Picture: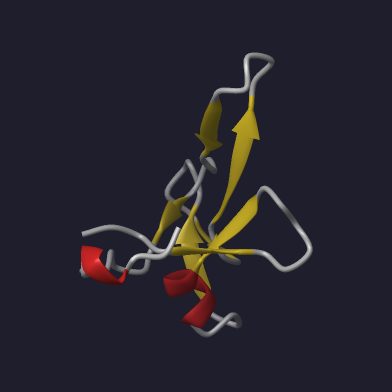
Length: 77
């Protein structure tokens, strides 16, 4: 089980959670680091260090949407 992210159009390194995106944006969809519900979606950033090593920068708030089951045969990279 995992969260599924799509790349934000026009941004090479910014990805958004499709579960949070599909939630009604008018509702509170994420929890901040203090456990308070806030409006918005969860974004992550793909970062490259000076050695070219890639890492993912995670937000300070958490998903409220549930992780999804995925079929690894259908994953496109």
